[in-house]
Amino acid sequence: GAGVSQSPRYKVAKRGQDVALRCDPISGHVSLFWYQQALGQGPEFLTYFQNEAQLDKSGLPSDRFFAERPEGSVSTLKIQRTQQEDSAVYLCASAKTNQPQHFGDGTRLSIL
Amino acid sequence: AQTVTQSQPEMSVQEAETVTLSCTYDTSESDYYLFWYKQPPSRQMILVIRQEAYKQQNATENRFSVNFQKAAKSFSLKISDSQLGDAAMYFCAYNEGGDKIIFGKGTRLHILP
Image (cartoon, rainbow over all chains, first blue to last red; front, side, top):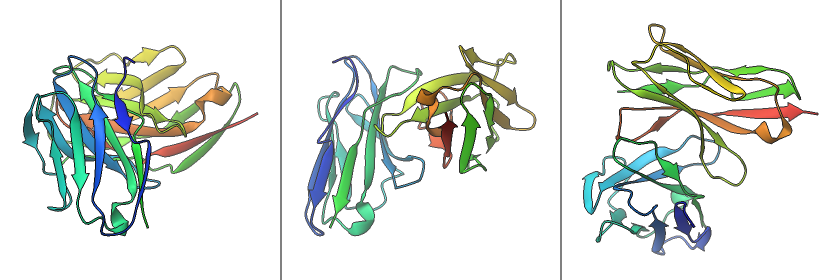
């Protein structure tokens, strides 16, 4: 597939569990972004990578949220000790330098 | 800080008619990009149209066009000849080149057959 791939598509976890969400960007895209979209709202920025470097993590809501992109390609967003307010759709986007972002289908996370 | 405001939570339009979605934004920058994204129930964010702030000419993509008023910081989307497949959430968005995107809260568009 030529698009941004996110897995899993749905994730249900109990409060307090740790979760990991995966993003496979489009091949050759240097930039990678994570967004959080609460129900009925627009996406909100979480963090940004250029290659393997995390250049901006100002949107991460707490230190329970952690993202990595160790080889400059696949990225993982990890949420520790999940809470109900973490329930949302998590969108990943990738882009060539200064080009429009291409979005994946997102992971819907539900915390029970 | 930059903000994007969509004042219409929901709108409806008859099939084949024209509808305009409103958006205003706030920024102190002179060089930036504005976007309209469509998000159907499948959740994928689809780029509908993109406007570069330094270009005075309004962007168009087939049935979709924008009215970009830089001084007023207004960026509306016009959909002509509305089709059932246009039903979705529409987000107005802003960014400065390769930076993060700032989204509005969205407008849900219903197409009436």
